Length: 209
Image (tube, rainbow, N blue to C red; front, top):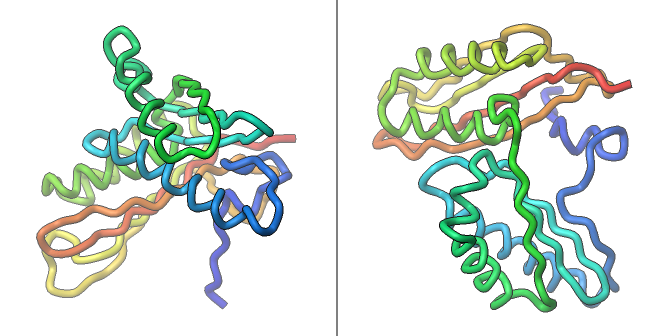
C-alpha cells in the first residue's frame, strides 16, 4: 500500500554492496557509525558547490581506514600537485580514530550516476531553470549515454506555484521489482526561494545475470 523500498538496499548482496564495510563490537558500533557520517559530511561539504562526488566507500581494518571517493572530476578532488587530496586527508584524520588511506577513482560515465544526475537537476532548479526543460534534457542525456531506462520525479512548489505538486518523466524501461536489474537511485534537494524541491532519479543500466 504505497510503501517504497530503496532500490539499492533492495539489491544488497544480489549485486550491490554496502558503502561502509566493517565490523565492530556492540560498545564501539555507535561511535564508529558517527565517525563514518562525519567523514562523509566533510567530503560532501568540501565539494558542495559543484556535484562531482558520486560515492564514498569506507572500509575499516584493525589499523587502517580506507576511504575511496568515486568522482566525476578526479582533478578537482586531487587538486594542483595533489594538494587537495593531502588537505582532505588531513581533515579526515582529525576526526578519525585510525590512520586514513585516501583513494580517488574517476567515474567513467557520470551521466549514468544517479547521484550526479539528481544533484545536477537540483542545481538547475536553484538557478530557476524551468523544471520540465531540466528533466527532459537530463533524461535525453542519460539515455544517450547508454542507459536502458530513466525515471525522474520532482516534487514541491514547481515554477513558484502556490500549490506543491509532483511531476515525473519516464523514458525506456525501469523494472523496480526485477532484482537482476542494475538500478541506481538517489534523492537530491533543491533549495529554491519558494521552498525545497525534491528530486528523485532512477537509472536502469541493464540486467546483471
